[in-house]
Image (cartoon, helix red, strand yellow):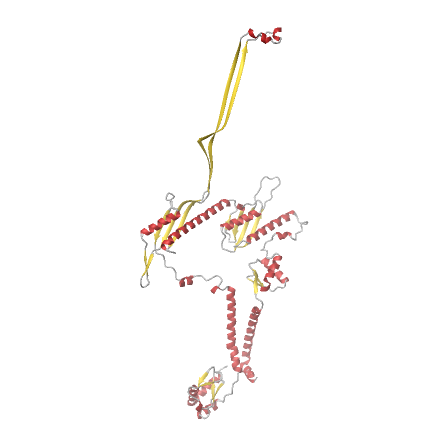
Length: 558
């Protein structure tokens, strides 16, 4: 207890205040670390939520009395790991996160009796836009979407009808969308809105890049895009064929192939009718026969009683001359059917007009006895054979204007593994395959360990050294006299930089050897007895200088 009191008195008020402040800072630091790491670990509840959804979710968590943490400017919400799944289901039951849009839930609490038809139409439009935005945002590569629909109403007694249109703004999670994905979004929206065609759906991304015009001409653009994809696939297929066959000759990696195909992107529809005059066939035959006869004679045209009597004409038939006329007519109509061929020919875009192939092959290498490699170019005969193989692989057509070039050049030496690793970019997640959160946690633990070591060596160790058992050394004058006489050697007093005496006890000189190791208080390890003897001899031979050094040590601040 007396040692502790002496220590406190020797420190002084200033040092005590500094130690108190340092102790308070260390205590607060370790308390914060203990509070952060002693509790339950937290898991990510939702990320990339907008401000409106985040405020509603925070309000719901406050009502449920759940401990949460906001990070990333409020776009990330962390909750205790054991409650994450349950909280997701509870928030989903409340329609959170809604993605900043309103869907058909707008009609859940609506008063149908007190709502006008105009408000109903507006709410229906908002709900349709919100549902489409949610559906589009669920596509891979899209983080959020905003949809605007224009559904014109047909005016009364009006013949003109305007088509509906749609505009979509996408926030992409990736760099860009493929043409097929853009078309799928157009067809998705047009199928959900009555009367909307894919050509009237315009799409832009958050950077203002136009993905679809929406001016009604996207049909031809889609056909062109399909033809372009066909060209790329055709070039890739030919390149694979050439690399496969040439690689068997020059070895793997010994050839580079580039294929360029020129295609006709126009679409042609041709209709033709062909008639064959030699292929006559009787279709129908019509025959008409007409027979007629007539008799002419002299008749008594007088009006008499005899002419009016029955059989008057027979009795008077011989009175005048008579003549007979007969006519026969036969008409035949034959209808022939001529052979007819009707042909409709449609030429789709993507007809190959010309193919150009460039093949770069490496030479051969010979290894000398010392390990050096010597490059040797390939012979023209070998290059000609390779060109023949390439022509056969691509279906070479000279009339079409195809061209094949095979060139032999030495390839550049590949980079070494060390150079490639030095120039390779670091992974996005962090160094050594660790995420940023793992690196931050490792840094915090390293800082804690460093502070613990500093506190141990610069705070705890001096305190323990001062509170240890220390013998009172004899005065410097007595020590000097004892050394001068050489009669007392049981105790050797050695003054350190702090002014305190360090006592070394000896049983007797006769029991010590020059190389015997002895212990000295507050000195780590052991010291040779011969070294202590030499110090005693120096003090004995130079008492004044030794006394001055001891006084200087005693007056040095602790």
